[in-house]
Length: 626
Image (cartoon, rainbow, N blue to C red; front, side, top):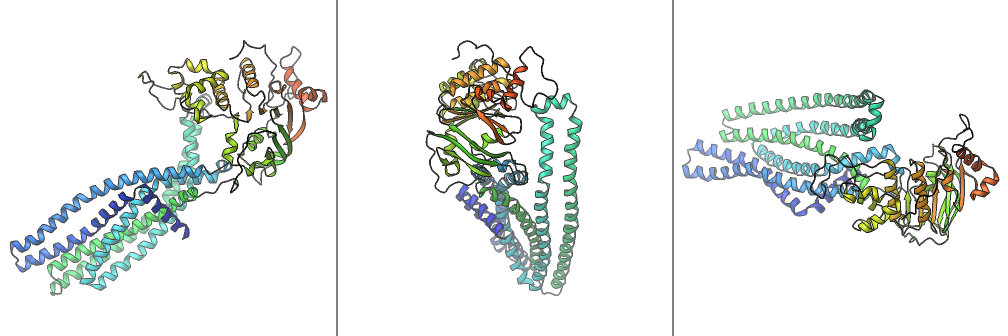
């Protein structure tokens, strides 16, 4: 019950903040509309009674004119109400959407986005936010119906208190049944959320350009379609079972209502025959019973529908009031410029209590102004280490310190403002080329000189400048953008994988104020010459900067000030390249395996090359770089 009250308060707050004057106007129009049917019934009764009495034209006109005015109002007010309600709904929907995603920004890390239950709740919350305008309309509709019912109840009580009680009592089982059905519908939506998300997943694969090559090459269309339709049929079966229950319950309730209305009509006719009721009373009674039954039916359906909307809206309220997934200090310390270094102290980490450890007691120092490289086989924990340094997760045990201060005591936004990063799974945004680079530092969004300088340093300026509209060219085939010259392209422009890699690098270079740079496989997917070029550019950029370089290409890290080798989540060895080669341990073995791929001697046989370690030796230095 408390969650229902919270949802009601949340929805009322949305309406009031989004458009208080429109809400008041909508309420006034709704209440006037509610009174009109009762007024029509009473005016009609009076006209009929006056006709039977033999009233004059003037006496009849005194009743007919108000009746005509009320009729005009009945015809006109729904249009005005719909107009005000639509505008109020748009404002509420926009405000609700903004609040939802403002709340999402309170999520500090990545954990919730890797939890299926949260993703299902988030999808329902998005639906619940869009239901806010519908809920507003339903609430006003309920208020209107209650007022109309009240007017008709008073009318029937005047004529027959017994019949009024009978009609009202008949509405109780309908209300109970409809609320039970509403709860079942809301529960079903939550149960089917994973099914519908999987259906969307398969439909997205069938229609996405990213999957189109493999879907066609491997003939996956029928396979994907079968799985998509299987999920749809699962949902359809559940909906069908609920609709059958709806049919039985609502059919029975409609039959009960018809029997009561029929019995009331027989009573009214017999009462009029004996003179207990006038012709106007009969007319009034028929209109009142019909209006009362219709109003009760609308009220029951409205309450059930509103209850269902509140249950769905509850998911929205849960997300809007979500607490940060990682603890944030009540009075966090500002993140100072890095002057000493970053320390990992006995760091253990796993993604869930029932999952294996990714890091096992890692202790490592990244000294200020030095380049530290982390290498290891796939799954050793290298990328996880980068996420922990960005505080996208917290260590399960142990701690990470920035100049001696635990990251958990710093403001996450302040910490990240001092970081730059190129991730292995970098984003390719469906933005313009300018915006794709500017997301690295939004302060440069309107500073094309800074954006171009970053692109030049990343070696992608020539490619972008040659596009149809230069830096304003849309790098997407999902949307069609109008170019400055007034052309309307049939599709956007896409870059190669290596060009996208350089765009991601340009984002990092745009953060030239960053104290700490994380480079997670920044040259993956590049050809040897491009890889060599990129590493030369990064070497210049990170000179005298504190940086972490994660790479499978051991030759790319040989000049790092410190190389740490991760194996099974632990630091197996660390030192400079020459020291590790002299130690003839894991690093030396992996380095020789990679180097053998570029030598004339035979390549080691099957099984000798560890997963994720392609060969890479330096190529001749290219011409001087900008």
